[in-house]
Length: 388
Image (cartoon, rainbow, N blue to C red; front, side):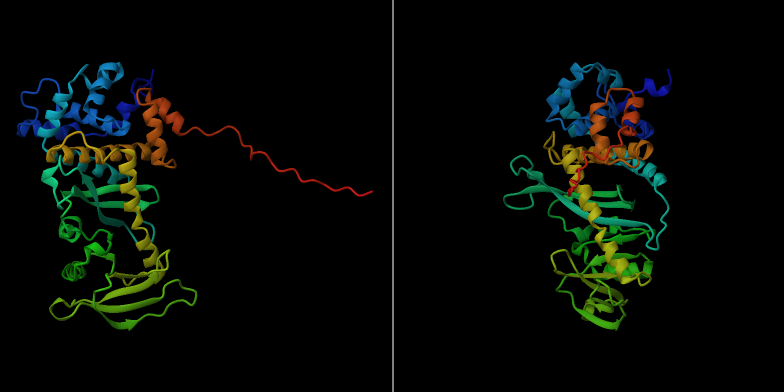
């Protein structure tokens, strides 16, 4: 028997988790001190499985362990109580899970293909708000009748279907998007795509000085002074392409930017600004449209990894579960890159749920199976009129 028949799909899926990160925390801190059964690694394995399988609560996790011998062997325990899971979730420092997530992101960076287009590497920043019950999550109050947290995220993508979190910040929902720009935009190694929520003329000037390329959407209220107009192809879908100076008086920018005007799918005017003058107007329009990749990512994680329903009500519990969701996503993407790059992440997720405790070889075979039938289906028979 080879190694593929000995390791389960679950074991292969969670294998990229760097246990040395947890060991470092244990050695230099109080992590898992006096812990007899529910260590941080066991907790993480329990919760990534729960996110994948969309388990309804801690009791559901508890019952799964009690009834699943393969799961018991994988994590090294045969039972756990819901109360123990709750205490661990509330006590565990979210920074530990953040470090584990960073380790997985580093692995994804190594898989990333070099950019072949003139655009180069692209990163998208945006945020998503996760609504919470005000009565249960009073620490996350941001309106008189609402509570919630906001995930500020930077994602990297180099090709269709390969999108992954690159950097993340968690805040309460009342935090404005532009306040996190310094955390999310920190290197000149890629072009950053942003929406209108990240409008900051002072920072745009700073990006021009530091050589950080960006593409953003402009709010209608911003004052625009046109400096120069660029010619467009006759058949271009871009309405205007001009060099501009943004702002007035003390808020006036020192560096010129480029502004293109186009329309969205509903015919509404869209003004896009950038400090990239080396691309064509059409390339900039297509580049900004790819900002939708991060919206697709948010929707996928919320729908497929249960990121909007939490097992605890404390701030630590909520943050831990969000980081676990990000970890589960990165693990799925690493597996996809290894065995089925041409398949969708949804297909891999569905297959993994079904074959989680089967051998890794069976999952790999299922993902790469090609149908033996080549029929084009039932063909319509043409009637032939015969004349005598």
